[in-house]
Image 1 (cartoon, rainbow, N blue to C red):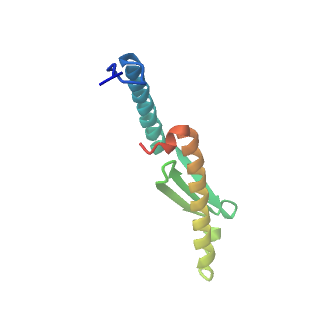
Image 2: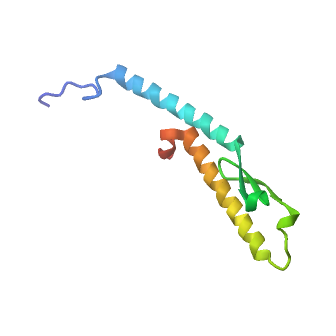
Length: 111
């Protein structure tokens, strides 16, 4: 093989490869820490001026729903249903924001 010198061709040898592996391991550890934080961080979605509140983790696991009795009108349950959906969507939007802040550029790696 003419011109073959061995090594990692283009990676500059073992030292650079070792450094890349260390960086990858550090990034993976940071991602795992951020993922754990997202499981415990809570956000609150609201609708109807606070008539309906939804609490969820930043990973979008709903942990509580509070409905103010003023939001309940048995003649118009559709309004209450719409408020619940709006509160959930507000919570999801806030969870996405927290997720993106915590994960930053790592969030798009899919690891």
